[in-house]
Length: 174
Ligand code: NI
Image 1 (cartoon, rainbow, N blue to C red):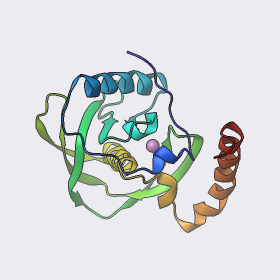
Image 2 (cartoon, rainbow, N blue to C red; image 1 turned 45 degrees about the horizontal axis):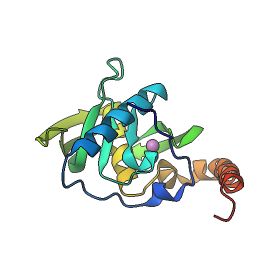
Image 3 (cartoon, protein in one colour; image 1 turned 30 degrees about the horizontal axis):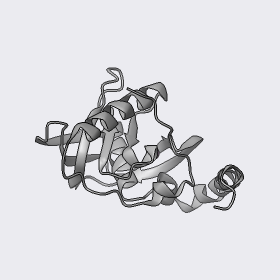
């Protein structure tokens, strides 16, 4: 296993629409194993493949953070949402030190393949439902800062500009 580099905002790969996974082969299993190690070492509760520079539809979500044994969600989709969206605090490994309030559905039904290709259904709520929505957004090139309400948006702008400048300094010429 290996610890992978977590891409930081505004790395363009974070804006890509991830490709569906058509074969769960050795490469995908290796990617999942490396992502699990990467997520644990970063103390995250979720990680999408796009965040390690590989835009395929694979995401990890820790359903029980105490166990630190994340679910591997391959080609995940949200089948149904329940309840009115609620505000809650979120962060993201691609935005170190940034936290913001985002509205998410409190409960949902999600369908995904596991590493053996088995199609599974999960009903999740609370923080787990929040994490699933956050990670699935990554697979569509959406970031939590896109969903922040107008009141938080002002204070975010400064932080985002700083990140954009830091990224530009590290990647001259775009
Ligand atoms: Ni994230």
